[in-house]
Image (cartoon, rainbow, N blue to C red; front, side):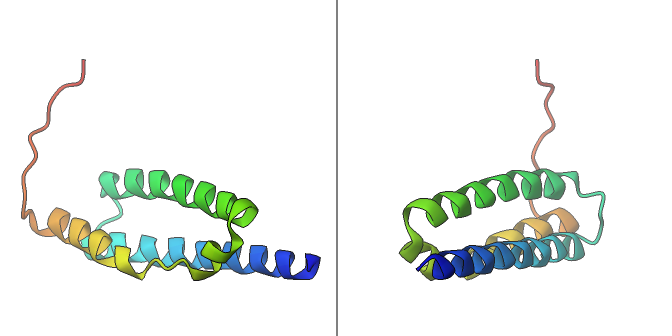
Length: 97
């Protein structure tokens, strides 16, 4: 049983690292630039949440962790990066303060 827990943890960690790598490539290749600061901001925020979620599920709901898929989110990432590249939408820049 303990061996299965370690195996699931290892597989979850490997899957998360691979997903973040693929996500990074999708965002920045599609945007056509590494200077897409919104992509970096999103990636850092998303990575924090996905790591926290994976750790939580590993501790409290292992069955859900085994079934979890990221495929549905791919369209969101590609769409936002393509929007940056081709300027499909405009968002006015405002001063915070």
